[in-house]
Amino acid sequence: MKISLAVAGAVLLGSSLAACGGGDGGSSGGSGGSEADYCKDIKSAATYIKGLNGGDVSQFNEALDQFKALGDEAPDAVKDEWVTLEKGISTVEKAFEDAGLKLSDLGKVQAGEIPEGVDVAKLQKLPQTLQGLDSKEFTTANDAITKHAKDVCKVDLDAS
Image 1 (cartoon, rainbow, N blue to C red):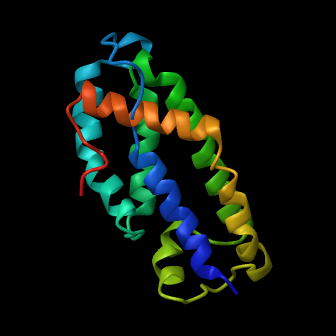
Image 2 (tube, rainbow, N blue to C red):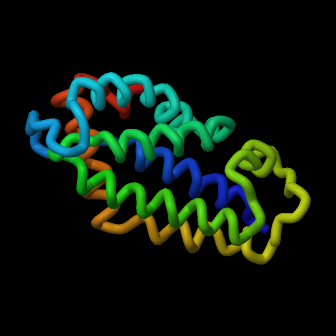
């Protein structure tokens, strides 16, 4: 059984989301929210993002909450890119839910434990589901958000 692949997929998602970059540095806050607030919040979320990049899935739920909030307040320059990432987040959440796995269980799975109530057959299919996030659309959105974070917000989400 390749349980570690499910965790790797979750970490891959975190790595992709870490690439929270986007746009060409446009400065309009637009309908998404003020760019200053967004930049402040992306700086706060960087800790979660970097943790996921490093393989720490213990705060995956908190990280997803942060990503959703960032998507809601994203400036126009990266609003569409966040919509793309949010679709990916929803895909992951649904796949985990279908397998009976809570995102808070990722630490256990990473340690080789299968939490009670998990459908092992569906758990084994998670890597395939997560590979669907390895699309050009998802990668492009991810790269754009990361670039915007670095260029406009002065936050390097790739740094360790």
